[in-house]
Length: 466
Image (tube, rainbow, N blue to C red; front, side, top):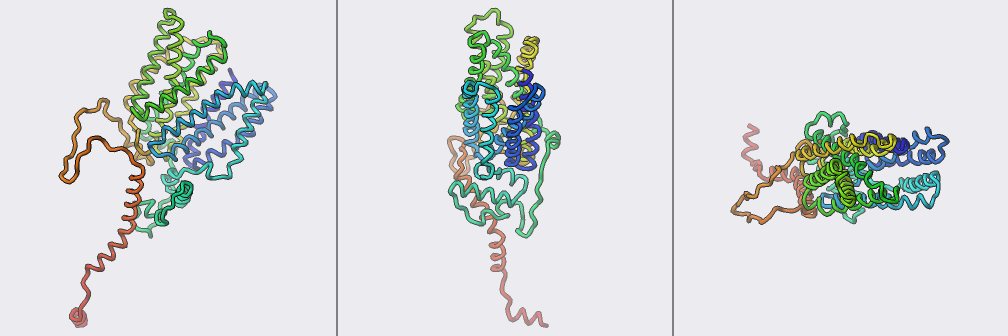
């Protein structure tokens, strides 16, 4: 248990270091550096000669893996458009669950933990061999443009367009198209602007949303031990709780895929938190009066909802945080989630002493988080915020939607029967046409001004000579 606690402590410290690095040096650099460091650390874990060395190397190994996970999570999210963000993120979660389900089989095949650690390190080395291929680990064009790195942003956009088989005109990559606020091409472009975590603490809305989602992620991860403890009497004593947690994570991701885009982030997170709190409270107060099958049902329901709360809180936070501080802010959320996961090995160290207090605290926190979720905004179908100002403008929607809809019945526009949906193709064509109009505005304005001025006559020149 102490080695597991050290490993999870590394998962808590890794995002705190790699998150600010991703916001300062880029998503690609913050992904490759921890990946390269994880290879010698993994070899060191396999060759550890004493327990202290093993615990320390496992701590640093977990920190490197957490930094790689965070950078990959952020870069993947920023490459997606609004309709596909949820599916791509949850699809990556299914690969994670597949690895968890295959891990016991790999452990049985290796038969020794040193060989198992070597096999894991070998897989990381195979991934690291592809570092030279930028198409496999592209830099985030959204981050480059949000931090005002125009030239690198041009190259990233061109690479993405050519990779998708789209040929854009050369004037699309000019400065006046990428930065519409520049009044003339002769003006110098602004220098790159980077933000740090301290500037997020000075905000109001961004810090509030991050605090709430970090709190829910911590509860969703920490309360899981309250439910898995009731699964230990069922044989086999090790594999049944492990596969139940891994399978519950798969079911929770499937539940999120089917409901989040349809009903919204906030309602699904609220429902999952309520069910998680009710299951925890019923097991806390009525365990000795409930039948075994009902205890098992409540435990499984609690595991499913806790997994959903944790995964949705992290995904929700990645959409709420602006691009310029997304790495550092999401690092705090992942660190809070890892601290909650560390509750399981810490309780095992003390032989489950204090479990009742642990259960009471997390069950109470789950009810408290229900009230705080009401203050979150809704990000479904909206583009990701890039600047601090856009992040501060995200306000919570009204709790109850009005049934009366007020439409503007203009004489030249026919009213629609419902709200418009996000159309990426139409939006892209509109942006391209608008940028072309803005780029041609300066030249056409000067030509029009020359046409409107009257030509000088012979009488005007004679008068000027007198």
